[in-house]
Image (cartoon, rainbow, N blue to C red):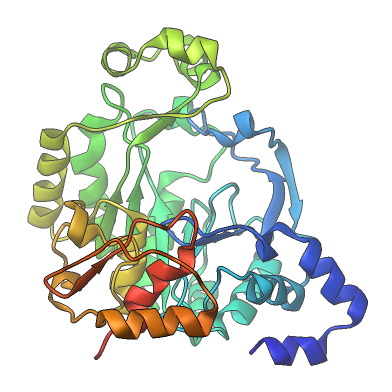
Length: 361
């Protein structure tokens, strides 16, 4: 696949792509984050952490062409192409559909790789646009973010309306895409009580699943939400604000309790939505591939219809041979019930992918 772009692009284009971060960054558990825009996001949601990362509110298109971006990704030594390769996650640091024509061009090119693709969005996507996405050759898993209906003017004053996002869910679902509600962030004491209503609205609009996520906070986000008049007593009970003040740009996770998560998962199932605790599970389930973050081994699994825990895992010798072929030196920590358990993700992200690539279907 890389050879195609070697021949297609000029030397200048290839060097430009190889200087880009997509050619170097290690994937996260949710996959390799791919950015269609740079410079920030215009929606300016009150809870968003990207502005503490130095990003602004005036994004511009990624300077790489779709072909250059795809070449950069293929050049990444941690990336494995194909359906059982590295997950692709779009929308981590900005809204991906701010430039819709550019976005569909990127999706069309990336989908040629065959990797499972997931995007998160708050934008309105028309039925014709949704149909274009549905015709792409790779598994596509849309996440549509809705976190509040009561506090929109406070939390998301510049984002598209909830009604428009529900219409986006309808359009994507009608096009045949397995669309998930992205219920993140859930801020305890603020929007947690809205979860049932939001899940019901999403289900009625055609959503089939929900990704339930916690809240990442920085000191400036804390001050902003406080100044907006929100009651943050429950947040303050779960984090020492002195730590926030000492490290103002550092992100801290405000987790839900085990009981809070359990209630939301049960509620989602009762409504008719498949619940996921992580976005990577939604992407993997949609593509019918085993979850690379091995949630089913760590207690993070919600036992969806993907049934990762039942799938056969590779023999130890097969794993070693695959690592040898890929030129990766790594320690395999242990094998439990013939299941590979690897704890070397930070050093060798490709190893996690092997757990999926070597599955016998």
